[in-house]
Image (cartoon, rainbow over all chains, first blue to last red; front, side, top):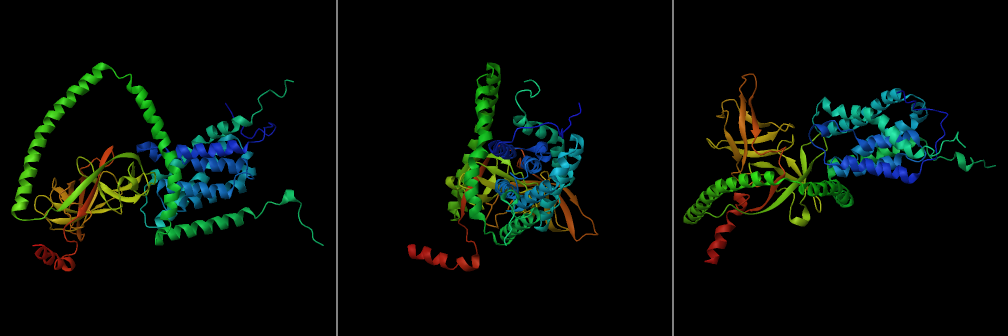
Length: 173
Length: 298
């Protein structure tokens, strides 16, 4: 099994804005699930993952305003500092938009290798802000979520691409 | 001679400029939240819209739970019933003793004309989920402003103190656990009455007694209850037991770690205590007018 992520010859249908909104909303819902215990410790930030995906795939449709607003919503939902997720997601959106041409050309495995540092950057920003505000370092388990997010990237890629695949075989007319 | 780009090429500001704008905005938000707490009303508004989303997973889970409830076998119900009957018998014995003690206590208090220390009403709440913020120890409970919960109220379970309500939303509130690094509880050693301040260590399994001199009399197994001198927690609620005492002459203070008595990570139902501290808050300021009033009444 060698999923060629790029597959440049494959022509996909244009993505529907409603589908983008639905996936972002679903990611938010998953983030809002009552996670607890070790699952909470290794839970990837699904909203960050979805924002990064869409910034890489559709940088003209999903950008800073979406990332920023979703960040604010996450801040309220988590009861954390107002603006910490907003800043982290904005930086993530920036990275996705700047790197979108590059990341899309790679195979799935190399994409994961590039997505993990971006998610780690997202975590590091939040960590830096919280430590500036006086919190203690929560231990290295804090970064586990980013690696879990990287591991989920192929799945996200497959799922989010599904509605764009042509329903009928183009070679079979 | 005005040449402007065709509309196709117009993409607005570059990503870097947008990033700068977003960074500035969020830094403003951060500073105003950390230093001035301006954003509580914004939080309230957004939380109202978030509430249905947060309730959705729980509602679906309870629906599945109810469906699953139809398939509970009779034997399971019988054994549970037997267990509950046995436990209620044990509890009723305890309850009777408690009632007699309460009556005796009230009588004694009347005798010494001591006023009741606090009149309490409680709100039973259910823990919805643990806070997702990895930097603090919080749980979200399903009762809020609409149910009479107010910020600052202590929260307990059947074994002891869990924490304190720190932020309220219309239908939810946020409880900071006693294990949070920024939370501290004034306590008293039940064995010898020594007062101390118990602080969280940011770890759910242990708490720390802060600034205790090396020679202070704390031993393993000592039970710590709230001292009530802060006016936040009513006096006498069990909080923790001392689990380890380290006296190192190289340090100024003893290192005393404690284990929380309440199941601060595995509780489901909790009790929010709504109590008025009827004891004079500041004796110097309030003590003089109090006797005058009582004399005038007689």
